[in-house]
Image (cartoon, rainbow, N blue to C red; front, side, top):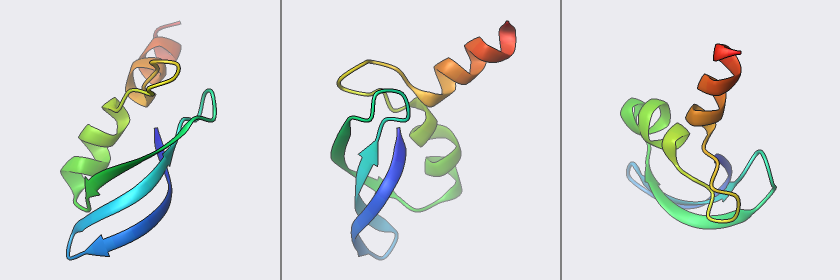
Length: 64
């Protein structure tokens, strides 16, 4: 999942529209604007529609 648009922000907390880079599914979720969230949590978010995550699919492509 990737952040498509931040729709609300308070301090470092935000609500955003996330979009799956594989199937295009969009959903609204909350997040936190820091290095840990952007590098660790965000790549592990699984799409509710197709079940893929950025990290899992990146690791698989690198192993081939």
